[in-house]
Image (cartoon, rainbow, N blue to C red; front, side, top):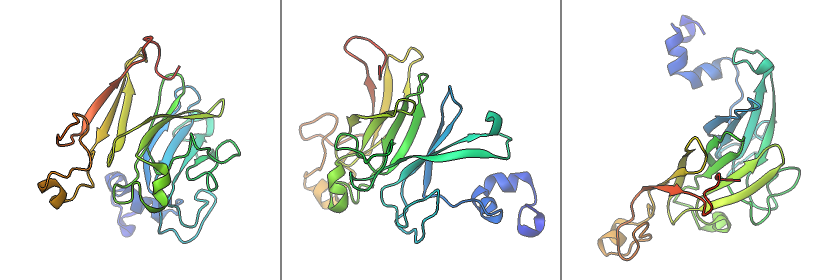
Length: 235
């Protein structure tokens, strides 16, 4: 990190982080998207959405070509952000039942998902995972088996993973938070019906009419989720 190598200040390092990481030999990852820290264990989780152009695998990226994505986690030495050492593992390999892994088994039909993106921990250490299958491949070819984008809840301690919701056609589930009492959750449905072509739009042949239904134009929206019994979300 010197001026001779193109980094004349700490600001250069912060602005050109990827170049700085390459300069010191950091492990290249498969499209890192969101990160989250378990509020109780202080473990750090990061989604690696995909990388179909990877040619060689390594320990942190176990697929040579990675269309499905995975989630990696680590814990800094002494839980300090200034630590020089850390322990890590792959928390979950996303993908179909025969090419995935969670708790030493493949994801079953009620769990399988791909392209993890959004990531957030609630106060009870529930990990909320949101997916971002590109609208250009959603519900087609190898991706047809996964349906629309979705959100799942994982319990890292007990090794439980469950699908929580599935979104409408052509969208991405992104952003999640709850009220402090965890009884109301907010999530975003982004660009529903985005795969609609210009001709389809002009002719009124829309792929999605979410959220208003009928013949309406699809719109992005924030969704509010509560339980019928008023309890904590995820309990």
